[in-house]
Image (cartoon, rainbow, N blue to C red; front, side):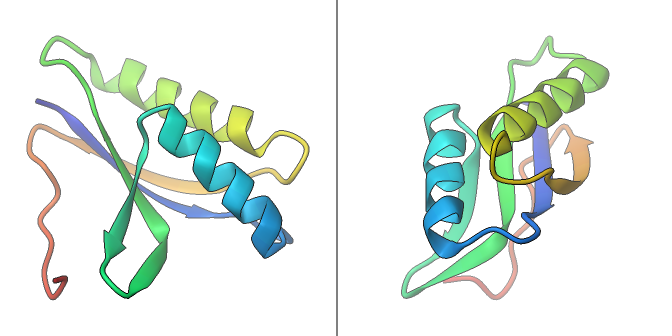
Length: 92
């Protein structure tokens, strides 16, 4: 199952607006990487069906972030696509 790992920056966004962006992303099945007791503000992941092309997954994620950020900011993203779930280290 292909995954996209996303690091995101929302320049100039207030905490309240960030919460609205986060809620929108979660509703669109883009999941924030969390650790109990604290947030990792900038890391997200999404997964796709096994027949999804890399280019379609990347374009889709960019579109979701731009849609959820519309009216708040232009998101700055770094994305990585791969066949395996991203490895986590040091997270509870």
